[in-house]
Figure (cartoon, rainbow, N blue to C red):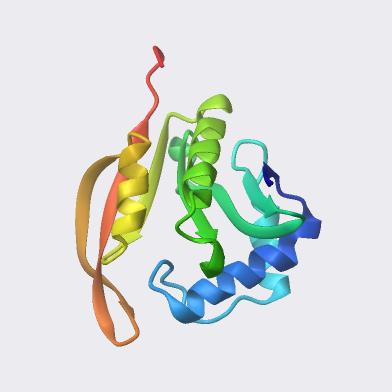
Length: 166
């Protein structure tokens, strides 16, 4: 049974393992070097109730995670976050990513965020479709802004804005 819950520091090893797999094998992140436990602890400490991290557990094993991170450290952006989510390869394609994105998006609305942004690398059509299904809108394309695996890649920007009537 799938359980999605707020992450604790005890989940950090599994979160790091999932993220490092994405760094090494995908263009889902433009990080190019694996993260250490110390780096991930600093990353984790920058999250709070307004910028949460959630994990997905399948039968007691962490199989994915999602986070809302500050878009910018400038205070005018305090009501805007960037969403990220990653699922272990062997658990992809069965709806876990969509559930994580939905829950973290709803949590962003619940904590009072006004806008959530997502950067999606060229070739990640599944991610684009997941965002579209959850009412994220296309807001632009950044041309050839990242280099990974020897290729210059575009980044698609998507956004959801919460209105006071929502």
